[in-house]
Length: 395
Image (cartoon, rainbow, N blue to C red; front, side):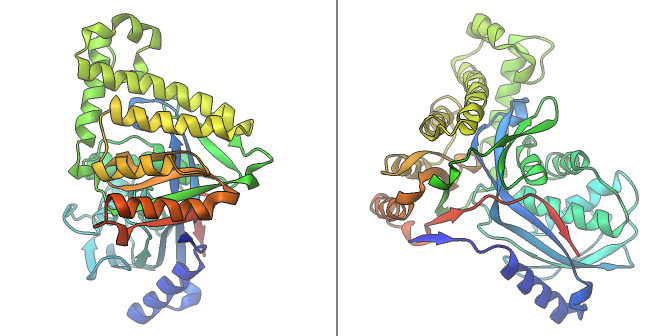
């Protein structure tokens, strides 16, 4: 019942073979981008307000295998979506097509310098729409490949900013930079503490006894797409709360916690809840970093549970099925804590587990989920995931 992801070797072998079969590219000439997904146990719904977050990259994600073209054109195949995508680098984004992230990447890069060369490529991903940042993963893959082909040298910070532009400006999702930063700066042996407002990262090293715990991703079988939810509405509500609390504020990190406590009655009940979630979650992230470094897994898990509860009660997000699944996960023996990922609008639950009880916990979780939501249980799965380094170019 407890499944494990293999490392990216299988995806690399598959995408290279398809590239060779379709476009006769010499396998020795193939280049690759590996963009792992991320988990974010603490830091829910606050990156777009400048709050700090904790993220780390895991051993599943996107592989893009590609070869340059001398013309400014792109041809793509996907292991997850049907049909050949073909477009020029200056075309507008077709938001209904699976290749929209590649089109948006090209447009974001074109704003920096003209792109003279395109590519042929094959993309492969796992658990698309599970709330593990598959969108940032694929966006960064296309940005990295097109930049490399066109001899464009980008810093890590520039990659993060370009992917933000890709999603905010070209695809209409008003998220922050949690996903991109986690993937770009990810390290195998530490959490990435992302200071969103200051646009910097620091490492929170793993304690010596992390072999005693493990990370589980519990997939609900219900995919999610944030642009089809209240995600953008919640972002707007947070901004409205900030402006009502302080006239020159644009986001909640412009407002001090003291001012919020003093002036919160100027807000409607709903806006008070949004702001309260923000300020409490910022504090949970800081406390979580200290707990993790000290190896206090019970404390860390309790903070994860509190984060999820606040997301439901204060931020008022989440899908009935995912809320039910998270409650099942966190009440299972051997689980220190959990919270839903990807905003709670479908997708998965991320859990910190006692390594010796993880297999038994997986059995209990699936049995409970099957009883609660029998029509979804066939698509559900529990995965054991391992930390890995972040974004890589190979070849």
